Length: 325
Image (tube, rainbow, N blue to C red; front, top):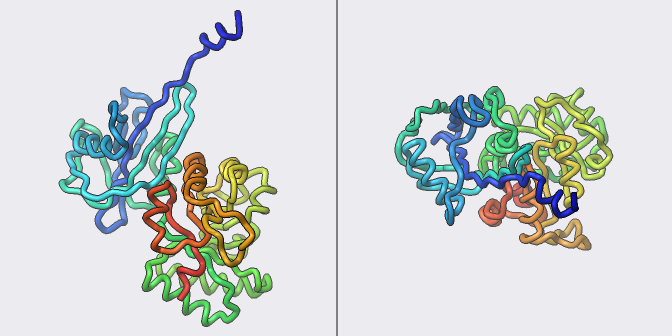
């Protein structure tokens, strides 16, 4: 058989573009999921409502049509959440996922499917197709990731952090304190953890994964150097794992070791790294498209960039300077 004949004989994977919705309850505590019929591929598993794009439809147009047909609701406000590429043995799936923030009507299974409002922290109790797993993480994460500054005084530090959570609604915190000794870092971490618990925020420790044996935080954030030295996920699945990334190789490594989300930087030139070439929005979007997990834009970001970041595929923005007052 010639090379050409062998190539033609190989089965070409179908490419399927699907629009899906993470419909959040009005108090933002729950998300709507639906059960796949038992007679279809991966039947019986739960999923986020949606369906395949018709010819010439955009993802958003398909989403509006599908939610009306499946759930009897009309989308009034939505924003991009995440785009997920997933390879199955017989097909390539692109999930174009939107977070629906406002809608008209009361959703119900118009096609006889079971639908259920599920608390965010219970989503992992439901079996989903493998392609949906990055969506679960994106739904559960906020759109702002606060990275702490290097304030040496604990009282001043805690006052700033409490203000960010109370006034600005910060719910995801990375404790980064390179100037502190190991002992001082642990003392501060316990204080920050208590404050985060009081405000319903998650705390990630910037350091070695072993820190979680000393402080029961929600997870750890890896530097890019730590990330590239790993061969496997260094912490249990019940904790959050994030990492700093700057290029495609690091994003691929983050996927290999099972990171739940990453920061990608620098999007712009920053005072702390003036000699590092910025990614810019175009390269950032290209990398985010293939990340396969939620990505926070980092590097010169402010809240004014939040909508732009979401439009090009980011989970949201991460920042030090813009979140500390």
